[in-house]
Image 1 (cartoon, rainbow, N blue to C red):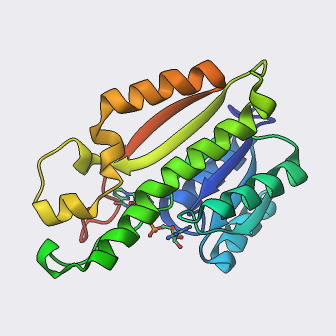
Image 2 (cartoon, protein in one colour; image 1 turned 120 degrees about the vertical axis):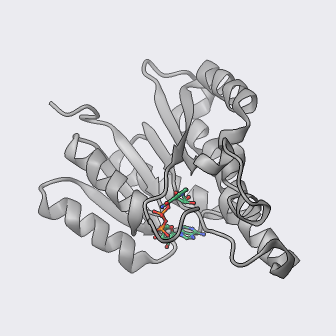
Length: 202
Ligand SMILES: NC(=O)c1ccc[n+]([C@@H]2O[C@H](COP(=O)([O-])OP(=O)(O)OC[C@H]3O[C@@H](n4cnc5c(N)ncnc54)[C@H](O)[C@@H]3O)[C@@H](O)[C@H]2O)c1
């Protein structure tokens, strides 16, 4: 029996990299997976890979920085699988160039995709895991893929670019979020990714 047998997991940014690997790993451990991505074709490819291995998955088009789209994802998850147990807030983007070269629009895009998404997703998942505000007889997990740059010194532009690192660099905030969420239904965890690309550390 897999470690997450019978669970339902949403993985954002599941069309490539860590998100795809996570979606496949969850499916191999028995979860039914909702693979979402800005690029629907790539999420569909991940779902197809899961199907080829005998697992269950659906693919959805999803911009994690758009609050309303989370409602659509939660409704589709309920419709397909009837529950939600795990959310992996993985989708994220990197900044480009030096801080001096960035525009306010670049900044807002980073914040929208890397930070707003965690707020929108976590809020939506808590509601889905505790329907009508009622605790369930089991707990859910909300996981945020962040960056080791949140806990180490780095050049300022890179640090700024890794806006998601804020989630890892605020342990007290993470802990208090986790405490609050746990009271409702879920545990939250921030997992700093180490660089998966030797030539392009983040
Ligand atoms: N790979 C690393 O070395 C590394 C290091 C530190 C942190 N991270 C973080 O880990 C996460 C995954 O990284 P990765 O290397 O696998 O990235 P990746 O670029 O390979 O994959 C990111 C996926 O997210 C999707 N995406 C982008 N914007 C989106 C949006 N607005 N809505 C929904 N999906 C969107 C992309 O289409 C892509 O499929 C990111 O949050 C990244 O910041 C990665």
